[in-house]
Length: 288
Length: 269
Image (cartoon, rainbow over all chains, first blue to last red; front, side, top):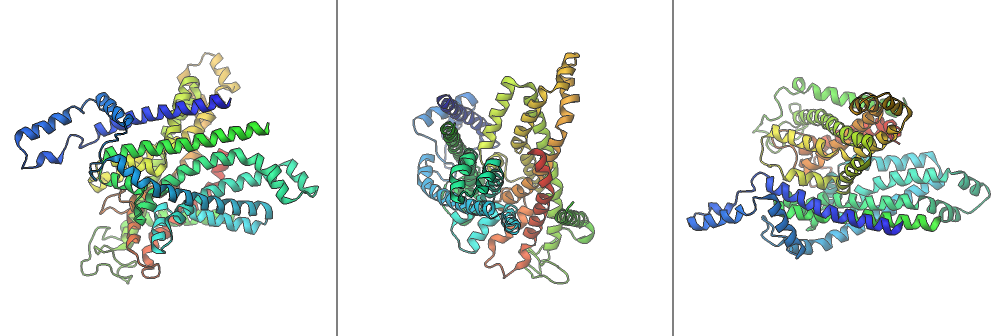
C-alpha cells in the first residue's frame, strides 16, 4: 500500500515535470513578442548578423523542437538565461533560494505555533467569548490582501517571515479549530473527560492520533500557501528571494525565467503534498 | 438570520448602491486631474483628498469599487461554469476521464494561486489599454479559479452517477447527454450556487493582490488593487489615514461575504 502510494506520487511528479515543461514551452512559444529580439534593432549590427540572429530564432519556431531542446538542456543542468537579468537561471535560483527557504521555514513555523496554540486553547477552554474573539482575529486577517500585509510589514519594520506567518496563520487556524472542536466532541473523548483523564493525556493519546492525518495534509497545503505568500512579501519588502525573482520576471515578461520558477515551485509544492500524504499513510498504518 | 448576517447584508447593500451611484455622486469622473491640488488632504471639494496626479480620490474609490464589485461576480460565474463543465462531466463519466480531469485539477491546486496568476498574467502583454487590462485581469481570475470548485463538483457528480434515479433513467433508455443535462446538472445546483458565492471574495482579494503588485488593472482605470498601491508610499499610518479608505471598504465587503457565506460553506461540507 505504502510502496504503491510512493510510486504513484513519483509518477505524478515525473508527469508534472514533463507536462508542465511542455505547457510552459508551448506558452513561451505562443506568447506575444516571442519572435522579437531587441538585438535585431541594434544599428551597429550588419545585415548578416541580423540574419544570423533571425536564423537562430527560427530554430525555436517548432514547439516540439523547442520543448525537447529545453528539456535536454534542463537535464544537463542548463536552465537557460534570464532575458531581463542576463544571468543564467540556475545561478539566479541558487543565489536566491536560501533566503526564500529561510523565510518560508520561519513563517510557517510561526504560523503553525500561533494557529495551533489558539485552536488548542479554544478547544480546551470552550469559552464562547474566547472562541469568537480568536475566530474574529483570524477572520480579519483572512479579509486583508496578502500584499497589504506585506506593505504593513514594511511600514512597521517587522520581518518578512512574520508577514508570511500572518498570511498563512488564519487558514491553518480555521481548519485546525474545526478539526479539534469536532475531535473533542467525539463520544470516546467526552467519556475520557467524564472519567477524569488529564487534558494532556486526552490530547496526546486520543485527540492527536485522530487528527494527525488531516493536520499532515494541511501541513502540505500550508507550504503551497506560504510559497504564494512569499511573492508579495519578497516583492514589496525588497527581499531578494525566489518570490521577488518571480515577480521581476513577470513584470519584465522574462518568460524563460518564469517557466523555470513555475516548474520549480510546482515541484516543491507537489513534494510537500506527497510527503505529507505518505507520512499520513504511515501514521494511519501505525494506528491500525 | 442573526444580527451579524443582517449587518453584513446592510453593509454590502450600502457599498454596492453607493458604487452604482458613482456617476451621480462624482460626476467629474475618475480620471479628471485637478493640477492645482495634487496630493491634497480631504476638503469640502475633495472628500478624500486627491492623489499625486491630482485626481479626486473619492471618485476613484467609487468607480474602483464598482469595477471590483461588478467584475468579481462575472469572473466567479465564469469559473463556476467551467468547474461545472469540467468537474461535473468528469464525475458523471467516471473512470479514466475523472482521473484525467482530477489529475489536471490537482496540478492547478498544487500551484500557489497568486503564483499561477502572476505567471499567467505575464504571458499576456502588460502594456494594454486600461479597459482591456480590466477584462484580462478578471478573465484570468475566471479561467484559472475553477479547480477547487471542480474537485467538489466531481465528487458530487460521482455520487449522483450511482444514485437510484440516475440508474432508473439510464435503464429507461435516456441518452447520456440528456441524463447529464436534465438529471445530474440540476442536482449540482446547490453546490454550484455555493461555489459561485465563495469565489467572489477570493477573486476580490486576488485582484487586489495583483493590483498592488502592478499586474492588475492598468492606469487610469481604478480598482481596489490599483487604489491600494498608494499605501506603498506611506511613511506612517497616522500621517494620511484617508488613504486607508479603499482598504477599509475592501475588508468590510470581504468580511460581509465571509459572514454571509458561512451557511454556503455548510452546504459544501
